[in-house]
View (cartoon, rainbow, N blue to C red):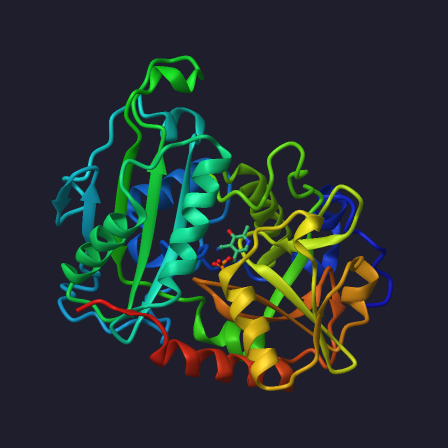
Length: 365
Ligand code: PMP
């Protein structure tokens, strides 16, 4: 623990005054999916908003095999609400789309490894559950949408890919009334993915505790994976403003919830602990896979309600999600976690997870 630095996790403004945090570089990894496809205009927009631009990841060694990559761009295949499109430029959505106007829709971020869609059925189930929660009728039966998803990925020629599956309320008028949107829309983007820079996996992430609390389940349940990610983005902005890599979010009561776009695991005396879903988190599929890995390998784990002090005294902490896989956390608001280096439990879990990704999943071809 760094001497002279008070507990600052309750207030983003105080955090940004903290000299220890200000020393940090702003090597911000992108969130879980779009790193490989960030456009110049996207970068310019973030500068104009006063948010430092992420460090270039062109040199990041962990990138997928890009069979048809031209001049560093990953091939992309898009299903645009009924038709397949092979370029970003041709993929236009209507301005009156309620997904755009209100974030009214649901989505999934999915990975393909080694020619297979990892945990495809779990992602499809979660998508349909999210849609049911917001009373959005997906215009395809699950099986048919699964086939469309597979065809979209097939068209990239990639064996390793990131897939964004979106179902939005579709075009309507300028009011919020979903009844004015007669036809929900389905969009699928399949492309390459770049993970966090490799050094983040070997050195670990520096994090802040966001002052922005995770959405209360009785306001907007985090278990519903909606297109409205502003709650998470506000936390991410706090991390950026504090000069660290990521944000950890608490719920309204001050219990540890999750990362801005990942679930969290805390190692306490050899036991892997993760917050229960009722705390108000997304029920992550990677989180579920890790529970199964623990069961299969007789590794002790439990769901546990935790507060910030549980993080500070942890032996190890890591985040997990489809895009990031497993990534260690070595510092929180200036406090060193464990040895300050990624620990053995993280290393073992990452190995076991990657082993699964090689063989588990629905074949693309
Ligand atoms: N929490 C949030 C808020 C997320 O957006 C995600 C997905 N990136 C996760 C957790 C991890 O979920 P999954 O393992 O299903 O990707």
